[in-house]
Image (cartoon, rainbow, N blue to C red; front, top):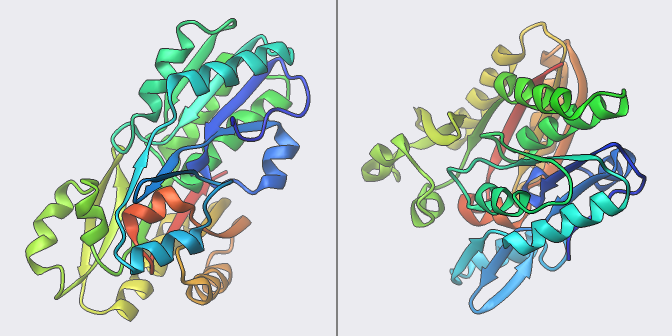
Length: 288
């Protein structure tokens, strides 16, 4: 199973992974392929996006079931690259979540060595719509007639300018999955504070400690608005099992940020949810 294959022949194919959380209609419009990561609940391995929903994942976490994640195998990428070449692609850009979080990038690099056409594999250092915006930047460049190198440059520029901040109810899930760096310092007092985290250098780092959940969410909103300023930006608001809070946050941002071009609100998938837990709120700010 290789996700959504390109619908039309393009001279450069765009491949990403299921943690980009792009809307299906957007992927179809741009011919973007998403290779699925896997969520393992107990002894059952399920593909993200097709075989497990965010709701099922949240329920498993709340029941404290064993939940882990795993990368796609190189053979899945090899099949995806072959399909893109057979559809007419003369080159492929393969954009993935931070190599600090997953072996997905490494698997793609292995497969790229034997691909029938040139493949440029990019570690965006991003995840969720921070990755999705990079894939869109590459796709829009290709749609405008850009080359493989130009698509890579557009994605890398987008990654360099994109910021992601997030709030979690507890650091426990991040700790279990080994996904926290400097935020480890918080563990001793995790129950006394609500951490605000950010993506920095491809890692999850502590941004601030806030005393209450309501203050943390208000600060998340402030950080996003400060980051956007008066610039033209795209914004994504993500959540896990907190749709009302996400919708309210998005509406406040719409009122506060004058330069919003597109505002996406979506639940994260099972892979990211497994590491953050229910109650996640995240904001991605990506300059145009």
